[in-house]
Image 1 (cartoon, helix red, strand yellow):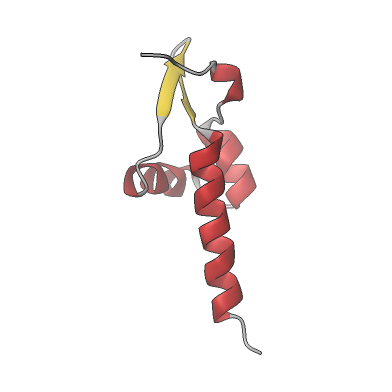
Image 2 (cartoon, rainbow, N blue to C red):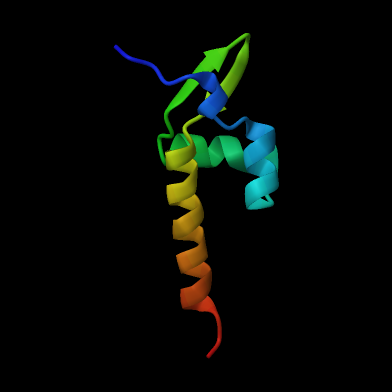
Length: 68
């Protein structure tokens, strides 16, 4: 099994800042959308592509619900 380097991953703190949500929400999204994750030196990192897909989805939902 081939793994990606952890340097390419995003921590829960990184994601909370990007999505402007609490860390609890980050863990909920990770579980709900089954984000790939890996650990290095005791820290968990999430796959940036998985995070980006959810960010795109959330942005589309906002665009659809905005008044016209």
